[in-house]
Length: 290
Image (tube, rainbow, N blue to C red; front, top):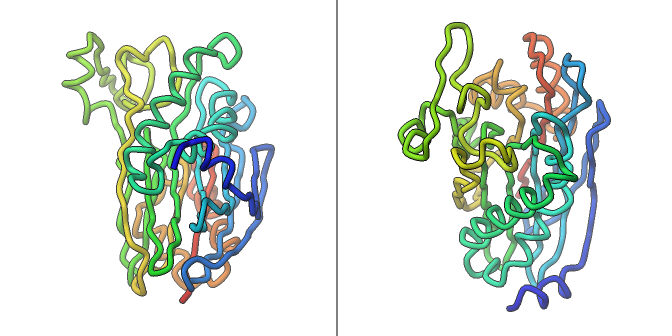
């Protein structure tokens, strides 16, 4: 199916679309392949002087005969304009890819690269900053629900299966990609008391935007596919404001007995604040019920 045809067949069934003047909270639900899907979200601005830089997306759409759940967290740096741009454009670019339904991994790879190119082409408007991203797409069919997770940077996706946490995303830390960065002419700093940084500046090795560092950075996403089955409890998407102070299993344990997805997301943000997280904190919890 061509990209334009897909767009024409997209019927928006938007439950929640939200930005970042916070704190904000909300929830929604739908039914995919016989499974009830409920989500909740909560955002809290960090203690920095700059405006909130996190943006979230949570919505349901229909493409052809497939019901979709679209969830994402965009954690901006050096301003919020790039993360806002991603909120408005990334999923549309993914769904416009001709092979989205037949080969979602390739579609996501292509859309991430295309979106990054558009950001770099519009630096005059969007500024010199950038953003991490973690996206999760639920694809419902007659027989099953497939989950496709992609990310660049250190915003993270964690799934709980029978109470056990499994990280689906990859934290793209500079030390992990030191060799590639150095081959491109960059360097990774390791100053005492600080985290590793690309060219002494950015604490992630992959991101959207960041034009001044782009020749040493990648916007290629890590992509993974999972099947949602009877063992799947819930999915957590969160910016690093949560993960800096909480392990994957701790996050799962904190909300494993919480039946309401919105309350679960709010609880995680509150726990992060209690643990002295100073960064912006954004959390989406997606619960799966038979």
